[in-house]
Image 1 (cartoon, rainbow, N blue to C red):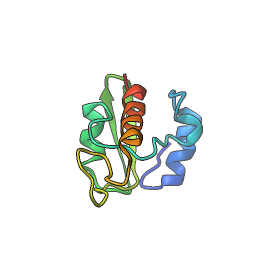
Image 2 (cartoon, rainbow, N blue to C red):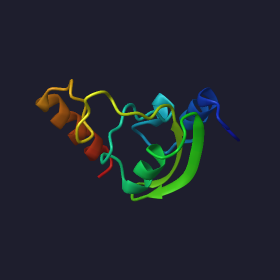
Image 3 (cartoon, helix red, strand yellow):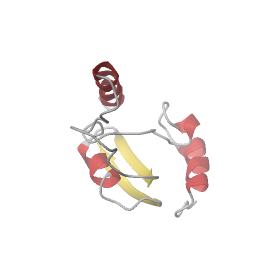
Length: 103
């Protein structure tokens, strides 16, 4: 089985083989993530590799992962990893949700 740089193949394989209850049904998708909300090993990959590729295996405190990077960028006005357009309560909830996922 190989996904290469095919995001649709990656999603198909994630649905069939992922052991993550939270993301398998979504084709392995985590959605938007911000720096500091993932385990460090995953952050290193997500924020340093070129979009459009599959990277890994990456070992973290949560297990072993393959990562497909769709897009990586800094939203205009982002400060401390949170877009300026978010209200403080939205920012707090978004970061809390990401951190809870990887405790």
